[in-house]
Length: 303
Image 1 (tube, rainbow, N blue to C red):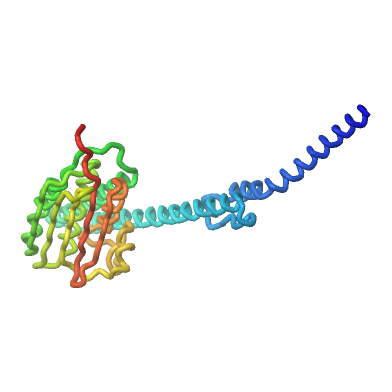
Image 2: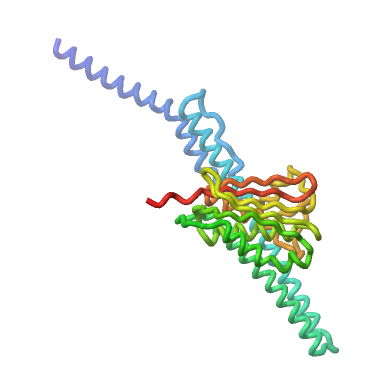
């Protein structure tokens, strides 16, 4: 009887091991499939998806989660490629213009001091445009990196400084400026917040119409420090707002090459607002222009 019991136990253990190995293999087969397919997917094949690997079990949820990750990565890589291509184009254009100006000036046998001086001024102007573009790109990159430490930021002071810098242009173009700047203390990076306010004011002036108006207001509301910039200008279709928030995009798909901006203003504003956890609302005005509101988190109370 003892021998029979021992043999039976050994056979039962062996059958249990074999059965467990078979069952584990069948259960883990979808996981091995997910791992193999995930390894095959790279930066050049992010369009591939794992798809369903089961019938509503945890492995299917894992595959769907990874597919969502791959989808976001694909969109990020595509956006990065477009951004690099656009930035390269915008930097190459003034470089080509500078080279052409210098070549023409040097090849002119009748060049005078005055013509050479004029060519130098034009080259300097193109260099200044490149410098502004690089500064805008650096600001955009800084805004996308996030905010490391919050500090008290008074939006009213930033708006006053931005309007002062644009006062000469508004006078020349006959743009009326209205303000209602109450103290509005928000929490954020002072340098990035200053760039956000400056870009909003610059856009309101640059894309306005002669004889138009700008209204800038700051106020503290429950749970937020609010900045509002309203301006006249060309009619902006509502469906174009999302595209204008992308880098190097302008109204009606115009490319750059003009001196009135780089198509980065609203992209910078959105990146900085996102980094601060601030809400950004852009509403087109039926008669032309935009109403833009940014709500910063208020400064925490002093203990």
